[in-house]
Length: 296
Image (cartoon, rainbow, N blue to C red; front, side):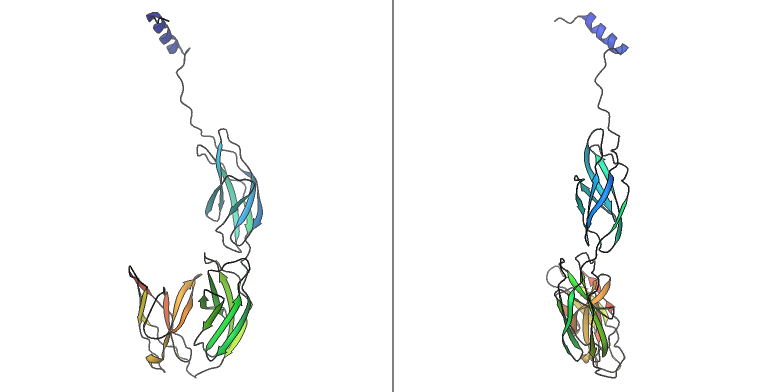
């Protein structure tokens, strides 16, 4: 077909008059999805919650949902069952869900639901396996349905020792009555309730009740290769010579300091990280812990 100048003029005239329109660009989607509804808690654990909810609708299409709880956000595409982890045990939370569409529009949050996580199981069967002088050994059973990262041993509620396995030996304890409990600690440093307690009476070894001075200038050297090296200057004691003092190596777990190695002699140790050092005299009197300084 031959296109004449008259046809071109007619087309332009119609375009100007609005009879013929140029193709319009797709309008951006700015409409958010409807809110998820009917959020329900299906199950809780020490570190998890499982929920379901009624899904949203959207004028274009949904991308996913986001569960918000305890400062955490987790995406999901499964309204029928979604599990969220990383929570603390025996803790109350409020949870909401939002929908996100393919354009990134976010819905108004769902109505909040509240729930409380369960507690981690406690170690069981705490028992004294030996006691002689100021040395006491304990053992216990691993708690069910938990793989503890550490066990934390307490003496009358005070932090005492940390252990990787279900046994511990504590040295140079002071004379008197000691009541021990054990907690299991998860890898996120969340802890179980305490075990049942056991009581041990340690006979006094001296009338000395004065603690040594704290170790001086404890320092950790972290080489590019090889083990950490912790050094300190010797403590002094009003009754006993410095050569009779031993040192406890402490690490920080769940916000407190726990002994991980007892009765170190000399003024240095290597092979593991030390958060603090304290001196202990033959009677079991302990200095204040001296926090370490890290040198790279």
